[in-house]
Length: 102
Image (cartoon, rainbow, N blue to C red):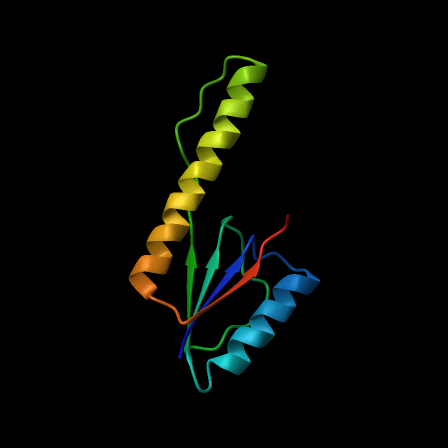
């Protein structure tokens, strides 16, 4: 079975520890890929069977006031959506587990 786990970031926290433990456990009998939306240091040890990837959100930003900040956030989220969609299409998971806020 192919399992894709989505996480916002991988800093040292409780959700991140739970994701690492779950991914390590599930990788014993399944193919597991973990995708993080924000680039950060991985604080917990991952099994070698787990594939890990970041969705890099560095996009060109404009600096023209309040409207520009909203535009930049919107552009970054749309970019994340397209990259996550691409990850799902290429990995073709049977199960998707999401640990994303909101």
